[in-house]
Amino acid sequence: MSPRTNDDATPDAEKATPDENTAAAMPDESTVEPAPADGTAEAAVADGTAETAVAETVTATPAATAGDEDPGAPAREADAAKAAPADGTAEAVPGGGTADAVDERVAAVRRLSRSQRRWRAAQLGFCAAALAVAMTAGSVVLGALRDGATTPAVAAVSSGVSPQLLASGDLDASIRSLQTHLRTQPKDFGGWATLGLAYVEQARTKGDPSRYPQAQEALGRSLKLRPDYDPALAGQAALAAARHDFTGALKYADLALEQNPYSERALSSRIDALVELGRYDEASKAADLADSRKPGVPVFTRFAYVHELSGDVKTARRVLEQALATATGRGDISYVASALGQLAWNQGDYHSALTYYARALAADDTYLPALEGRARTQAALGDRAAAIKGMEQIVQRYPLPQPLVELGELYEARGAAGDAQKARDQYALVNAWISLAHSYGVNADLDTALAAADHGDHEAALTAARAEWARRHTVHTADALAWALHVSGRDAEALPYARRATATGYRNASFLYHLGVIEGANGHTGKARTALKAALDLNPGFSPLGAREAREALEAAK
Image (cartoon, rainbow, N blue to C red):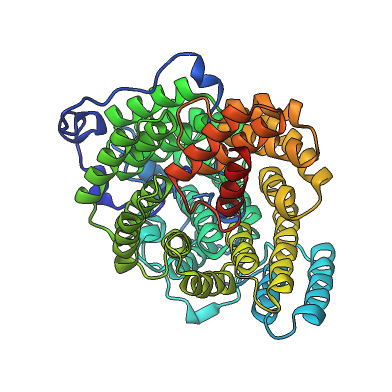
């Protein structure tokens, strides 16, 4: 289960009090304790999903809501209202134009995804060329608004900048309202901060990394007008995390918490950053602190994930189930139910996973993690036709690396006429999207390493994996480096990293499979059998190709 953020958290999620409804106070026959503070903390986690690399985000990937109970908040919001001039001064707004406008580079990738089934060979070359041209010629335009009178005006600062707009169910409409408001009230630092956060969320939900520079511009304007404004600092933390700059995310989260120790968004981003940097002990302490200060869905999900990483699946499940029981908003329900579905899938409990994904989709039938998780679970249960259909529908709308790779592997596993070419097309799209992400400041080395090791250039995979390992030591970067070394024929060097990836107690069948193969390549037949059997016992359908290869390797090791 990958780290999640939750910009869609509802106000109701913030009403809990530390002594009544913290994650630590949730009833169970066992107590909730922080993750062990021993040497196992040397390995941590970072999910290599493309969703967080390019869209989440992150992912991505939603952060906490506003409404943090800081005594100074009302005064700061009053200052924000006072700072907004009433003279009608107009000013250019980042991302001016329609709120759902898509960068030509993003559109090129999406056009390629839509066209590939009909014109795979010819269209692949054409659209890849179009994408390359767009990447060199295109740039984010920070111009004036062009939607004019068609956009409803915002009557007052409170309605124009309220972060609750981001949970209203129509993000594009909220952004248009904010843009119109800021055109006439350009000194409203609160409005700029909210617009920046909205762009980060739009990048996640639409798979459009072109929104990241616009978010940077909006958040920067907020801080220029009001240095040390904690919502803008917390927004910078969320933006940095979406771009996989976790050191920067931690820095901005800490700066925000200096101004407002109860900032839910900053508390949540701090946990995310510490987890993604591999600093387990500190992440566990940060989760406990956030639980005591601001209990609610965003904190509960992170609290659960920290426990899952240490192998405490029971506590992770219990906290998530409690969070789901208290969730009321559609965003919270789909978010938490999907997290439970992913947790169940990781443990090979496919029927429970489908139940949770159905719950998520009942709340929001477009929620990407639930759609992707459902297709993945269908594949694990052997319903390949439904899985392929589901993944095809996903990549038509969101041509992101992880679903593209999974769809490619489903084609390979099916092996029908033309499937080999279809699979290659998906992997080519992954390369295009990674290039696009890089152009918008997203660090996609982990995505490159994961995709290229199995479906691309092994040298590129190793280069990317080494670069990511140099930045952060986590279980996911350890596994990626181990596998990149293995496919490059460097098994002796790979073994310590493969062992490190599985040393924390985190239960991940793919990691165990990689460990088993690498142990076998080093002549450790008994250890290879143990790891391969553990992978298949845990999650026998963990990958369309990997699970099959694990069974073959286990048979060969007997």
